[in-house]
Structure formats: C-alpha cells, structure tokens
Amino acid sequence: MKQTRIVILCVSLALAISANADSEQEAAISFEDLRAFTDAWGFIRDQYVEDIDDRQLFEAALRGMLDGLDPHSRWLGANEFQTLEEQTVGRYGGLGIQVGPFEDHLRVVSVFEGTPAAAAGIEAGDHIVGIDELDLDADNIEQAGDMLRGPAGSEITIHVRREDQPDVLAMTLNRELIERESVTATSLVRGFQHIRVHRFQQTTRGELEQLLSDLENGEQKPPGLLLDLRDNPGGMLQSAITVADLFLPSKLVVTAEGRGMERPGEYYTGPAERLVGVPMVVLIDRGSASASEILAAALRDHGRAMLVGEPTYGKGSVQTVWPLSNGSAIRLTTAFYYTPAGDRIQARGVRPDVFSSAAVDRQVDTVDQRRREIDTEGHLPGSGSDADELEELSRSDPMLADAVRVLTSINRMQAH
Picture 1 (cartoon, rainbow, N blue to C red):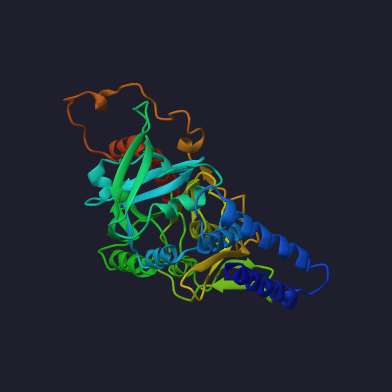
Picture 2 (picture 1 turned 30 degrees about the horizontal axis):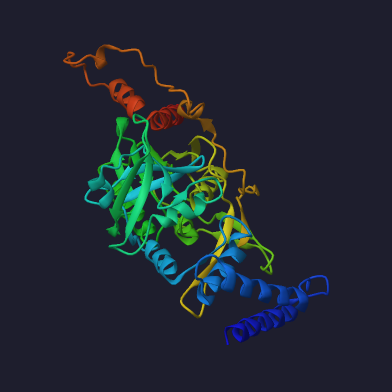
C-alpha cells in the first residue's frame, strides 16, 4: 500500500511537470527517472539504519528540493510557518535576543530584559556557533536565526563563544513568548535624534510615525536624524516601503524583477513627508540585510540621506511564501531587488558614502587604548561639553560617533 502511494505521488509529479513544460527541453524528467525516484524512496525506507516512515521521507524530499535552490528558499513545516507569521506582528516564541550574521555564525546584538536570554546571562557580543546538534557555518546561517525561535515552552541548547573565555559555553534555555517593539529612540549630543529600526514588521510604520510626530510637535525640530539600520536583518518588504514613505515624497523605492513576473514590480511612496529639511544620516553595516538595504539605498539614491558605516550584507532577493494545503508552506526566491538607481543588491550589498573608521578592520581595535584623564578613576569632572559627550560615544559606539560627526558637518554646511 505504501509503495502504491509513492507511485501515485510520482505519477502526479510527472503530470504536473508535463503540464507546465513549455518545450520538450524543459520536460527533462522521464518516467524512468520517476521510477528511479520510487525505487530510491523504497530502498531508503526499508534499508536505512534506523526506522523511517513515508512522512519523514516526504518532508525530507520537500526540504531537499527547496534547499537545493539557494540559501533563502526552504520548506516550512506547520510550526515553522506559524512562527514566521508570528514574527511579522512582533510577537513570537523565542529567547529575547537580536542576532545578526557574522562570518559563519550569529553574533548577539542585544539582549532584552526579562527574557530567557537575559536570565541565562547571554551578553551582547556573544557569538552563537551552534544550535542544538547543528554546528553553524556559511551554508546554514540563513536558517540559524529561524531556529532560535519556536513554540513557547520548547527547549533549545545554544553553543556560545565569548571573547574572554577559551571554551564554548553550552546553554540550555526554554523559549518564552516575546513581545517587542521594532523601533527605539534616544537623544544624542547636540540634540541629534538616534532612531534604531531593529526589524521590519507590521507595527514598524506606526511606531516610527508616532516618534516622528512627537519630534515635529516638540518645541523645535531636531537639528539632525540618525536612522540606525545596523544588524537589521530585514523582514517585511511592505513595511520598509511604508517607512520610506515617511521620508520620500512620491519616489520609487525599489524595483523587483523575476522570471514569473509579467513586468517588473515598482514600489512607490505617497506624497507626504515628515521632518522636511532635517538632515539625515543612515547607519549600515554587514548585518543590514534585505529590507534594510532597500530602505538605505532608496534614501541615498534620492538624496534624502548619507550612508555611514560599512557595506551591507547583500541579500537582494525576493522570497514569496505560499501556504500549502497541509498547513506547511514553501518560501521561494522569486525575484531580485534593484535600487532606484538601477543597482542590483544581490551579493554586492549597498556601499556607504562614508566608511566608518570602526569598520576599516574589525580585527583591529580602532579606538586608541592609551589612557587619558577621563579614564582615571576619581578624575575631576570637566565642563560637560559636546566634545566630552562625543568622546564618550566614540568609546561605546565608534560607528555611531562617526555618523554624528558626518551629521555635524552637514549641519555646518547648511548653516552657511
């Protein structure tokens, strides 16, 4: 009976291939190929060293079919698909950390208070090199971020490498329901506003619009805006477009071109604009990917902002998610993104207008380590000038300090 089901599956596949073939050359799979597939299925099910059933083989076949295309196309089981949907609204089962790709593993960007990660002592700057039994590498880094999420109450073991410890730490945590905002803001030296967009989800436009409204309704507009997209892995394309809508009146944001599209998809902003005339700098780094790269390029190409930092990750492909009848889904790469200037992002990324000194060589500490008066314990306080604040910022976040300097220069040029 099982063998009959396999044959039916293969015949259905053959009919689908024949129906969708535009030419004899495209219909490259013969019935002999499908018979070989059936035989292989049977051999694996009956002879594999451990018991394995048709369901496992079916899911493995789907997964292998998508994994063999590119790092971003994949089959999503029912639980994974549900987790993906939860992420779009900023509510998901997870650990409470923000991570970004770093070489062949994940780097912890921040840890949120009151979460499993905080309770376990995970710190910003930690490197996650393994998840459960999987060692992370360049081939699975895309899936690794998704693996950190899962149903609340489920257990996960992460393997952490920390700069000051020689051994990799194994930490076992229970996921919890995480609810978090995607936008945070602080005031910086000289009144500049630092707004960080952590990811693009359904609530991002509303969160950012409220912050900008508060700034516009204050006693005076801020002298400059720093939009921080560092370690932003992307998210919903439509969310990034609606964010661009706040800064770019009636402009092209991105063009998508794919084999299955009758014509390129062009996405434009509406006529409104917030904080008109306020200079803007956008911070980017190698952890800025996908939707964050699109937003940064659009703001730069239309002359609304200067980009400071380092080249971005270079994920310039479109993934479309199709739900399947059994509750699972496939996420398939269907198009490439092009910036308003016509540049293709894929595997190239977006280059900054100003390279940050902190990004020249990440293996070398670019901050001068010689001690100064301000480093001496019990030193007498200074006057609290802007220079002192910028000095402190240079120590805690040198790339952000570089962006402040660029924004200061823009202010001075506009004042003359």
